[in-house]
Length: 380
Image (spheres, rainbow, N blue to C red):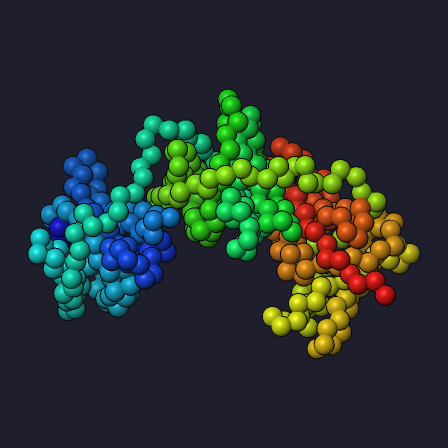
């Protein structure tokens, strides 16, 4: 194998694929990147770079000048480190059949050990399976608006550590739940035919969420895996098995009161009041509804001190004090797109619903609904 390409382009591609590389593992090849180059008489020659940890793979391509087609596996950290230090605009990588690789650029030359590509585990490739197309920015917003609510505690069912994707006639719905909170988001979809449901682990989704890309994302649904093609990068992930909770049945259908608040003001107040909470002190914050004043008071009292802040709201008609895990409430508000949000409250122990002011339209573009379970307060 031998090829030459732009150093910066190769560094960027390797850094992208490296995010899926395993740390310490019993399979040495998984600590490396698989490099495979081919000649293409009709277009540019290409190099494919793959990182894989047996759960998620990231594959990307870069245009190169192929002098000899072939493949090998190089240590990911070492390769990315070398590419980051080469000053020349172009770099050449060559690997032979004896497991020796040479990386050269300008006056610098590095000789490394290389592994055979045969030692790299095979990655599931999409056959002729179901395909869905969705704008990349919409997909990223769907992930951002739900993945934060996926379960992370060891006691949770594995199926609830991922995000549910539901393709129905004309609509895509994403949902995540961890037993204490729920997040759903909806967007129009070109899907027709029977409904399709699958649950994707969070690791691949978080990588997709931060990818800088535009255009459409193509989703390939396989029997046990899912692949996302976005901006020249392919993310492949296993799917989670199990029965996802019927989250719709958990959403309250009636409320004692609802009020509107400026999202930024409410979030900022929660963050300031929560400054007296730390890892050792996990007291809840208290949201006291004050209908006479047209406001709510966010407060917290710990061994460190006390803090409170008043926030103006519109429409509150109930006198009540409700406890919350401050992080759950802040996460939900951070994922809201609107300048103003609606909070619907039934009681101090019933789930609180956060939605756009006009309500969560089931098939509206970007429509969302978050639900947070209160913390029971000690009554004095």
